[in-house]
Length: 255
Image (cartoon, rainbow, N blue to C red; front, side, top):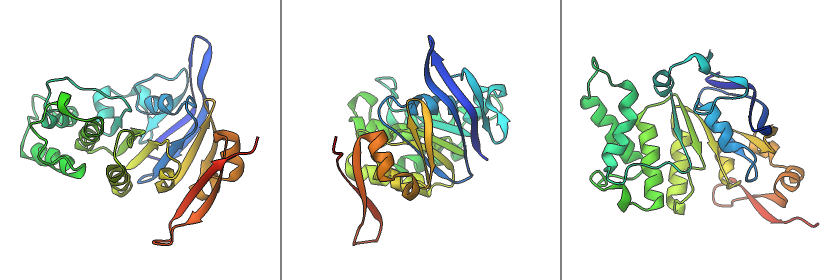
């Protein structure tokens, strides 16, 4: 497996935030993390990225315990797009995306034409061509989000972790990003708030109270029982007549 964790847990001052999570993402899989607010999705992603050290269990990257790997080595294989990532007010868009190449540069390996090409492709992938010289502080929330995704793409990772990447984006760019992530030749773990967007994923991991309560294909996981118990709503699968894809219609659960 490309990325896996075993009995992963994290606590703060005796309060268990994440507990006993074990999962494995297969090469090329798009694994979605869903759950109500406060269920532990962001904390789990940070542990999978090696930014938060677990208080129990371990994470393995390409079969190796992440705890024994250097940060630079992890960054050459894995990229994380956080929900509220920031950058310097005066940094320009292209410079922000170029930071994604940092793990590959050294005194023996200087910046070159290939790095320029990779950065340009990353900007094109998130529809930011022509934004190179714009300063961070002039960007909208959605544009900043796309810059952060472009920076992650510039790392050319084998594993891409994203924490609610469609937040702040208009509907066109929400769909663009979801299609982009699904079509990338990488393993991706993506936390999502919108359950209809979660249908893009190959499998879903459902979090509740810091624990994983279900994992499997969306059609098997998103049952009426689970939606009632974990999200407090009812839901029914419908079929979009234009392309035959499934859509979930939600309504309030009777109390």
